[in-house]
Image (cartoon, rainbow, N blue to C red):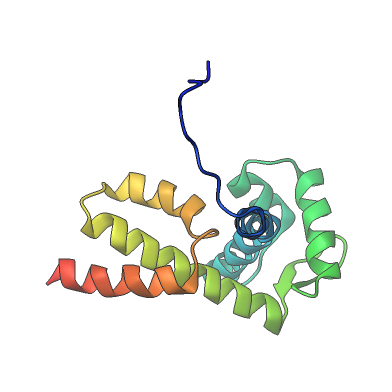
Length: 148
């Protein structure tokens, strides 16, 4: 129930819309970032990334992975042929490195703030996709101060 005496002031509609647009853009890229980061991890650990491993580690069906891999191919992030390994393009590798960097900064900050290792890893999975470069730089600097 709304308080009729509440005096709520809304921000400028254009500014508010810009914030929501930023969130929508982050949602569009987070699946791609998660996949290229995992593909890079699998390649580094096993020399290759395969649909079955992606499916198992992402907790989704093979069909879902295949659909996403097709999208990543259209976006120029991966190279794949049916029944073969999946490889990152230079653009995919750059995206994986950027995603990993953001993840590591967020995890380090959360741990330095006293969050448990397990929770920091889980929470970083969401935060890393929505945090700006400016905020990342501040988190990184603050982490260094806390860790001293």
